[in-house]
Amino acid sequence: MKTFLLFTLAFLSLTSFQSVAQNEISVTPVVMEVDSYVSSLKLTEKNSPSSFSNAQNVEDLVYKLQSSVYFNSGNVKTFGENPRNFYTDIASLKGISSASLMKKDIEIVIIKINNTNDFNSNIDLSLFSDFYKLKYIYIVSSVNTTEQNIAKMFRNYDEQYGIFYKINLGE
Image 1 (tube, helix red, strand yellow):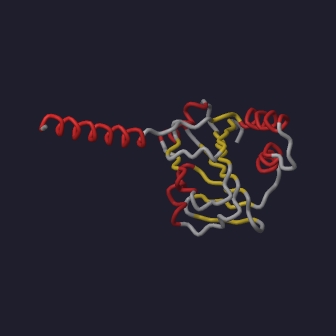
Image 2 (cartoon, one colour):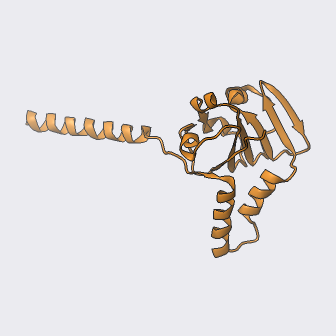
Image 3 (cartoon, helix red, strand yellow):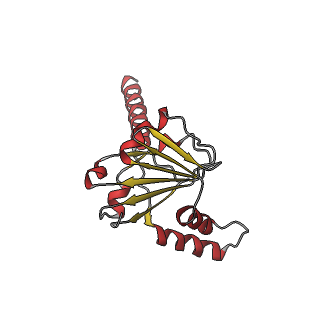
């Protein structure tokens, strides 16, 4: 009877440990170049048409002038009413939670990567939990990189966000 009890206890402990270990595994996000991301959205929408186009929305957010919030080095600048775009850089991310920002209509966060050292930083998506309309994370890098390098930066990934990037060596 003791052996059975010890075996059962050991089994339950092992099962609990495996469950905790599985919950700790982080999911690596899919990261695409911005034009590829838009193309994939268009292909999906071609097969299931609707009145709202995610592809057109991404193009509007990325390429057209939008009301925006800029947050750099603790300074907040808001341009326009009901901003949809939020611009920041890697170094400023840690200050987001304590900053007074207009978050309720933000649909896209644009994060600037300025140098290769920025790739050693993390992008914790839980920082954006108060951005209720957030759909997209857009990385703009002024240094060459790969999808894999960008994907490694993310923590607390949530599949509700589309993540894409652009390398802009001219800025």
